[in-house]
Length: 254
Ligand code: ATP
Image (tube, rainbow, N blue to C red; front, side, top):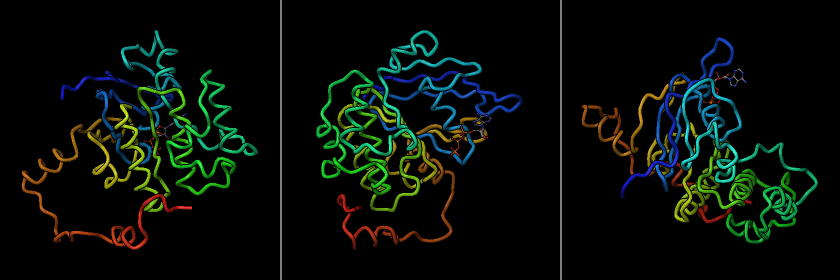
């Protein structure tokens, strides 16, 4: 496969007053991949994402998204991307169907609620209010709203934080399905196990700098080749696998 960059970030810097939150970051995201930005709280992941999403101004650097420059063509970029809203953005008294109609209207796109809810296995909740959904369902719904404008790229900022293992794995399946349908996915997480199984490539960010970019397999192989050994023999399954196996993982969360 030829890797065609769909996002290019060059020497991105973001300062808040004297504080440098993003310190000369460069990376590319390839078309059709799940790309992970990994790092601890405060590393600069959200700031970087929001600048790419045209929601926050940069201090310096160059960014292009699907061939469009962030400075000259922000409107074209907005049309081609899907961004998860924070929960506060959902009107509390509307049900999921009504929210989809509302968002479709905002985009000027005619999508039926059932089509969008079907993509995230929520048709049964069409008449439920957002606030009455489980954590996993809330995340799936917010992912449905990112897909309304048939985006080329979606951005997911810590979509699985706080979810139980079953809901987390359901969300991984959904994200893989979205990629299989041709959408590039950029995700932030601080769960390393999640990045390992979900992401095609990851960038580690720490203190506003990129400290490494590669596939999870390459990172691990290089570490092992350098002589690193885990102190303890790893079991072939863990407690999370036991839980998933006991409960069954298919869309079970309510
Ligand atoms: P988290 O996982 O906690 O969301 P993050 O990697 O996404 O972390 P950012 O939210 O990008 O980190 O924040 C990076 C740094 O910039 C943090 O030290 C944060 O306090 C600071 N920061 C973020 N937004 C602002 C702001 N509007 N004004 C001042 N400092 C800010």
